[in-house]
Each structure stands twice: as structure tokens, then as C-alpha cells.
Length: 536
Image 1 (cartoon, rainbow, N blue to C red):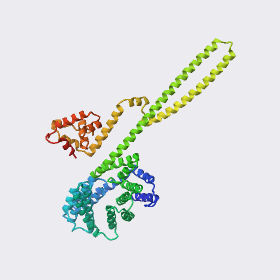
Image 2: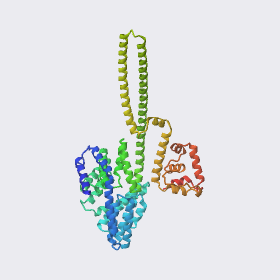
Image 3: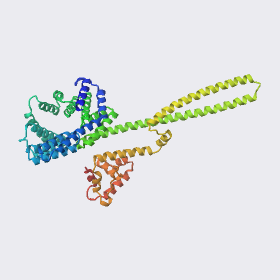
Image 4: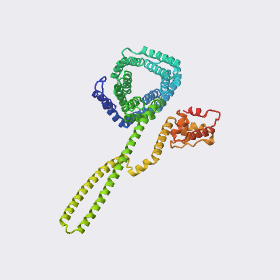
């Protein structure tokens, strides 16, 4: 199966032309990406089956065979790195426990630095750095030292990048450079390790032409369908972004995303970065599909850093998507109203013509009774009347035909509108139920998104209140008005006027809610809203 996937991706790349060719056909690679997403369940099941097989192997090893169990635990940790952060963390802890039982300093060191690597990739930089400081590389093999230096370099570079303190940032960059130099000192000349170092060095100093040269060497050595292949494709996209070649950036992000999806990867960056670029290009529907799929995988992976990175992009794309959806619904409403008006006009025309027909029939009878002597004239009048009836019939048929067409078109609109009857739709549009339903949907989406980001908010919020005032927590994932007000405060919306606009209340009402909750606080001396802002 995996061999087939690799060959398939390789065939795609060959069909799309040379790797440096520009312009490239984005629609072709987007088609491949869409198909991969459509069949993602198959790839996920295949990846999970491999992990389950490896887990069974680990469980079947006797506890007495500690060394074998250690290496299997390490293999499981590596296999879970792009699938589940929690599982990866678990097997790392298992490996560390076994290493401590074996009292093997090399295994203990590598377990700790791998644990530090996981912590740093989940924004727990200080804990990770603390673990690294407990270790030393003197007793490690050359292969382990490479991993050790690489993890240490990336950990210090990560904390240097994310800290807002310039002095600390410079200090940590210096530490990172020291480990980079250590890694360079043991890298073999002309090896993939050396190419990787030079590629990274080029990216660090924005020498994208140099970075691209070594990326090409690494890409040629990577196998389609592997994590290394996905990473090099992603780095090539970053290189092209630095060279301001937007089309090539999207192309290689798509290549990396295809590889990630087919490899059953849930921790990735390519797809949501591609979604962001498509959103900037105005392709909201496509961006929405990609970011929604990426968000579902990110939630399953459960890595804090990825959630932080994707949340702002998700919010922006969702907003654009909802705006376009609302605009489309308004246009649909206008079309339905126009169709309804035209239908009423046609019905009025039919009634008018029918009455005219009745008047003509009455006139005909009266003429026949009044003057038998005018037979010839009467026959002419009768013939003329029949002709008029004939043309009236034709006109009615024409009206019926147009009514049928309008009805057919209206039915198509109604079918797309989920079979809502026109009269009900007009009544619905005149009522406030439409806006109230939309507000309910907005609040439900807000509640769900907020509680996914702050899963312990409700319990921590209750802990700030006196026991008799604590709000009962249900399982509906729906916030009360008071909880929603302080949820908005938690995400930085603190002005009562803005909160009132969002919740459709008067500002005085919001102020009263806030004042009442503050009076119910457990610690009345403290700044209640500041405590709410500290909820994680």
C-alpha cells in the first residue's frame, strides 16, 4: 500500500513537469489534493493499523526484556509524532521509565532530550530547556549525538523566536548556534546531514538561493510518501515564499499537503498555510474546505502550538465564508420574491382572461337571441368569436407554459432552499425568527469554539464564585448569558458596549450582569475580571 502511494505521488510530480518549472498548473495539484482529502479516512485507517500492529508487538514483549521494550517504545513514540501528541508523550515516558530501570545513561539522556523536544514543540520551552540542562552528550554515540545536538539547537531557537525579550532572544540564539556548530563538527562532508545544515543556514540568513540548492539535493534523496519528503516540500514552499514566488509557494505547499494526507499525518502546517494564501487570493470556499479539514486533524492531534497557529486563520476564513454565505442567501431571497411576484401577476392575467372569456360567451348568446335576421352577420360574429376564443386559448396556453417554466424554476430554487414553501419563506423572512436563528447558530458556534480552546473555563470560572452562586454545568456545550459575557472578556472584548452589540443586549444590561457576578465572587478584594483573564 505505502509503495503504491509513493509511486502514485511520484507519477503526479512527473506529470506536472520539472520541479523548477514555472508557471505550474495549480488546478492539477489541487485536484490531487482534493481527492486525497476525500479518501483521507482510508489513509488514516491504514496508518492506525500500522500503529496498532506496533503496539501489539510492544505488549507481547515480556517485561523482563527491557532493552527490546525500550526500542519498541521509542519506535512507537517516533511513529506517533505526527499522529497524536498525547500518545507520543506517553510512549516517551514509557521509554524513559525503562531507561531508568536499565540505568543506562545514554538511553536516559536520549529519553529526556526527546521529552524536551516534545515539550518545546508544545510551547513548554522552559520545561524543555530545564530537561536539556540535566543532560550531557559526552557518553553518547555519534548517531545519538546528532539527534541530541539537533534537538538542543531547535529548542533554543524555538524559545529565542517566541520570546518577546530581545536580550533573552539573543542569548538563546547564541546557545542555538553553539549546538549548530557542534552538529556541524560531526557531520560528514557531502552527507545529507551537511546538506540539511546548509539548507537551514540559508533559511536562517534569508539566503534563499543557497537554501534552494541544498533543498534540491535533499529532495532528490527523499522518498515520496515519507515525512522527510513532506518536510522538504514544505521547506521548498518556505524558500519560494522568501523569493516572492507566490504560485510556486502554493504549489509546493499542496505537494507537501498531499504527502501528509496520504501518510496519515495529523500534525502538519502545509495545508493551513495553503488555506491562508487561498483566502488572501479571495478563494474563500476552497480555503474554507482546507482549513476545516486541517482544524479537525489539529484537534485530534491535540498539540497546543498547532491550535494557537491555526485558530486566528480559522477565525478569519470562517468570517469570510459566513459573509459570502449570507450574501448568497440574501440573493436567493430576492430571487424567490421576484418569482413569487411574477407568479401572482401571471395568476392575475389568467383570471382576467377567464373573465373576458365569460363576458364574450354572454355577449355571443345575447347576439344570437336578438337578431335571427342577421344570420350571416351572426355567423361572421360567431366565427370571429371562435377565433377570439382560439387566440385566448393560445394565450392561456402560453401563460400556462410560462407559469410551468416559472414553477419549474421556482421548484429548483425551492429544492435548493431545502423545500421551504414560498409563502412560508416570505412569512419567515418578515419575521425575526430568521435573525434569531442566525444568532442562535452564531452563539452555538462561539460556545463550541471557545470551550474547545478553553476546555476548563467553566470549572475555573465557577471556582471564582461563592458556592451558592456557582452555575450548574451541563453537557450541552452551551454557555449561559453570564458565562458568555465573561468568555468574551477572557478573549479580550471587555467593553460593555461591544459585548452588548455581540449578545444583542443593552449596554446597561451587560453592566448589571457584570456587577452582579462580581458581587458573587469568592475573593471580593481581588480584581475579578483579571482573574478571569488568567483562566487557561
